[in-house]
Length: 355
Image (cartoon, rainbow, N blue to C red; front, top):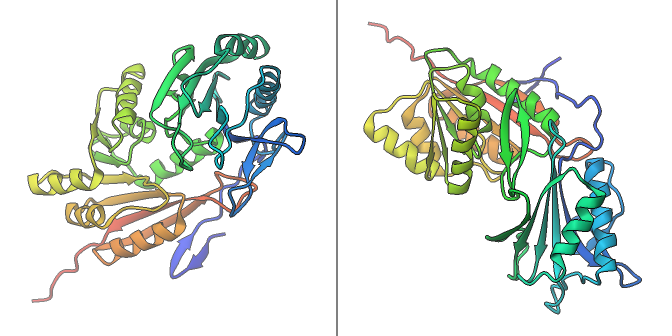
């Protein structure tokens, strides 16, 4: 049964059938345990202290196993964890991605230095234990920062990417690719979003903040044309490659700021029947929202992981000629306080003036 909040219907949360070991992306930070052995774990809430862990119930079991092997090899080869205070040590973080559809694995080791002693032996030993690892990448991050991945990468083995599948389409994923961590619930999320978009074969669709083109390519099967816009040029290159892999030709991708793209579309008189948007947690900026209101598409579907920002942005849109049609939360992160939420908005019909 739908709840009602502020006069808008909120549908029942779409739950995950088996809500464990769903995280297909794992990020661990290296540290030392109380015996001064290299360990790995996650930051304690509201702190910068690393809590060493040996396993996690929400992380993919393959990733858990690989992380333990990495720690065993690191101890065997006398690698040290990076100490932020002393600025000493080699290993900073480890990112592991597991393909849901093909069970391929990407391992990315973040080091403080480009010098990685014994890396060839390390790669050989790791792959001998886990042959499903298809690629291993070294990311060099010497900066004093909380950002995990830096720009400099070196492929130690493989192509630097793995394949996964969503909605029957193949996608190539790298270490720095934005890709939802829970593929089972992501299919639910995108299916719901596209259903709420009510796309027609004649529609022109804009996918703002399109990333590597996941929802753009799924939407392209339902409408006339899709334009995907994303400021990250690496993501756009991946999106174009994904379109070619899936032989989808009614979509094009543009590497630019979404707000700037919308402003130019308004100036040129371009029209879109529907706008799909999936911004970062902080939501959209005022330039984008003002241009979106001026563009005046018939339908907007807003996917968000940050409900506060989504509420703020939807409030703006509702004050500029839209009304909320449906709110659908999807539990993309079981066992946590976070969720994804889809809001569909439709353009208000202008009332006829009485003569």
